[in-house]
Length: 114
Length: 115
Image (cartoon, rainbow over all chains, first blue to last red; front, side, top):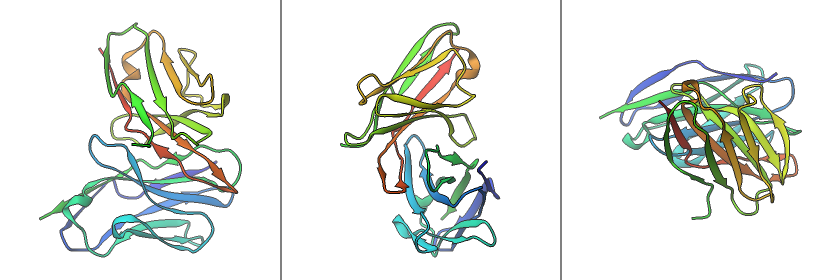
């Protein structure tokens, strides 16, 4: 069975400082991993995805994530936070092959302080 | 806008009433998923369709819940005899599979409040 653990329920950073949102996963198969963002009263938006190609994945809005199989991690980073980055972030896993739904973590709320 | 759309966006109902939600996927997507998201939690899978066939249902989907996708295009999710515990955001996503890759695109959700 697949599962995702987001290690922080809330992260607060100052504008212009780096962002790190931590995620560990568990999967019996070669996983696909995703980060989605959810702004208040908006739908989930895909930030980036890993599907067994390059381990360093670049996404939208300057975010990137690195797949580390040995650590079963897929942490999300951004060099410099912007006020508009404040939102809920979800780390998500699915099996790389076969018909499986997405399994979401509980989310990390990112606050950006001016 | 060619994204996933859901209707209504908000629904308030009294306990015991039936409600129905609609999802229109991205037009070329043959897969459609329903998820439920309660406050402070990540979305949880309910069910999914490939074309008109319902291929998987979660244990979360009690017998009061039914979903259809009659022509392989839009889908409906009905909740009968609603309970206060059904209050949640109901999310729809659609996708198409390219080789071994699949990415799901989400609609804005329907927020249900059962009084």
